[in-house]
Amino acid sequence: MDHIPISALIGALIFLIILSAFFSGSETGLVSLNRYRLRHLAKTKHHGAVRAAKLLERPDRLIGLILLGNNFVNILASSIATVLAMRLYGEAGIALAAGILTLVILIFAEVTPKTLAVLHPERFAFPASLVLAPLLKILYPLVWLVNIAANGLLKLGGIDVNKATSQSLSSEELRMVVTEAGAMIPRRHQMMLTNILDLEKVTVDDIMVPRNELVGIDISDDWEDILKQLTNSQHTRMPVYDGDINNVLGMIHVRNILQLLNQKETTKEDLLRWVRPAYFVPEGTPLNKQLLHFQREKRRSGLVVDEYGDVQGLVTLEDILEEIVGEFTTDPANHIKEVHRQKDGTYLVDGSASIRELNRVMHWDLPTDGPKTFSGLITEHMESIPEPGTSLMLAGYPVEIVQTKGNMVKTALINPSFRRPGHNNQEEQTDAETT
Image (cartoon, rainbow, N blue to C red):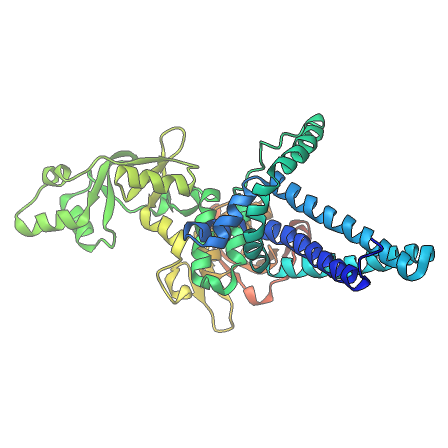
């Protein structure tokens, strides 16, 4: 190379460093692409996305091409730098050239382009695919040989490159994607999407109207009492039973029977003709499955039964939809009839109140992995029926027992504004005291 001008060698060295930066940035940019955004852009026929997606179908070939080009460029740059150093400084310049070239390549051909590619992967990857796609076709035989050798070594280690790692997301990973979407997805829509993901963790037992609050028609009652109950009912659908709720005859649509009442004198036999067979739901059914069952069976409500066939409560389609979209109200304290706000900011809560409903509507954080009602949560924590006036710290919330009835807490006072953050169950065991 003695006859090549020094200026030409310097120009070639600069060009090779630029090529090295191109290969380094392209590799990082292509690997850093959001695969789901890439698929979306490819479906919309974005040319750069289509090319990049095609290259990423075989990442072993892509990496082989990039590393082949990058190593060739770096080795050639090292050779030219060595020639330049010897012509300028003699043999003493070889070590100097190696040090300077290492620093130059590290800064200008590795760290800088890779950092930019990580920050803006699409700006690097899509234009780079214009060069890499035809280059892969030209150098395919050489890339193929490199891949054969590399894949052979991987197979010796028990790794099959043909079995690519699944790119599907778990529910928790999908939740993270939704929550980190920021302004791209409105906050309200984020909550709805995460609530849908939570459906598989919630069962019909958590949202059903419990048996003791179930309103139905006992066909053994006097006809006048039944008529009065139908006329004053606040429910659209009601179970009809004979003597005991476990002896269910079916469900009735109140609106239909009221239309019948306006037309003529009716009897129990007329009412029974409008009774539709009941739809039963096994307890413990996840809400995501029950929603599909309602859709398939074309039902809007079902009676929850245990393993012995005893009725435990009533679940409706509206209850499941509220788990997704939230309560259909803007005044939570007035919506839950079991909660009564006091002037000092505390709340009187009926023991029958659902813990999940309290958490969802009042934005509290009571534990939901045990009892379903507020009374049950208190008695489980105390391991006994507390006396009125008993104070305790329940999941960090100060609670005072106001009234008990039989074997349950009828009313308790809770002060959410004085909750202790980071409270755990072991601490709670030492916080209960009787006043």
